[in-house]
Image 1 (cartoon, rainbow, N blue to C red):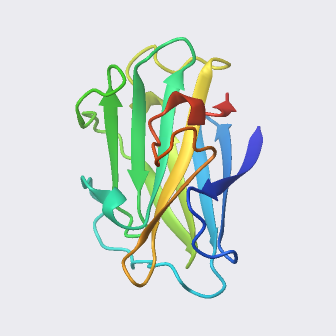
Image 2: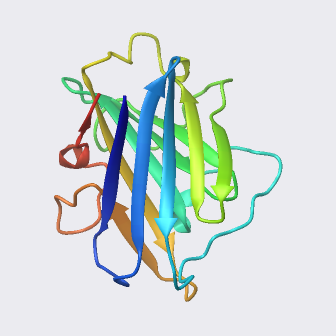
Image 3: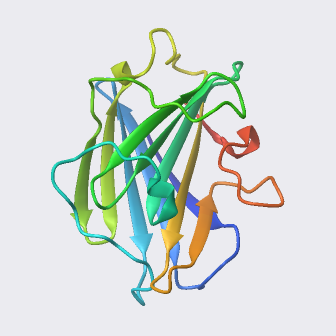
Length: 176
């Protein structure tokens, strides 16, 4: 199963920018490929740094995000990934809960496929036991893009609030 989606900016900053995401589940792994079309090279794309580590605050610059919840539940996970090959995972037991890192020894695999393309592989066993329920999951995919002047733009499947809010369940539009 492969799904392809296009993210929309909250406030368009340049009509030439596009952000597409392809996702698939195979062999108990969720794979996302974020593909930024930036023909004018307007967006800050940092170089990878070794080693791949967890970092809080990736959303303060160019970063890709994923939100996952079970349709009938209020608890959810948030993942952040950057071109620096940095990442983090947070668990929210309810909406508006405090930011809490999800303790895990499992790491997502992050690979830069091209200068503007990032692939992330998340083992489904990273989630708490019983969380992943095939056919009952809702995903929100989003991104923060920083331009070369330091301005941020916010991209998501939908923007149901009057301000960027990736945690809003009405923006979790992908059903798996």
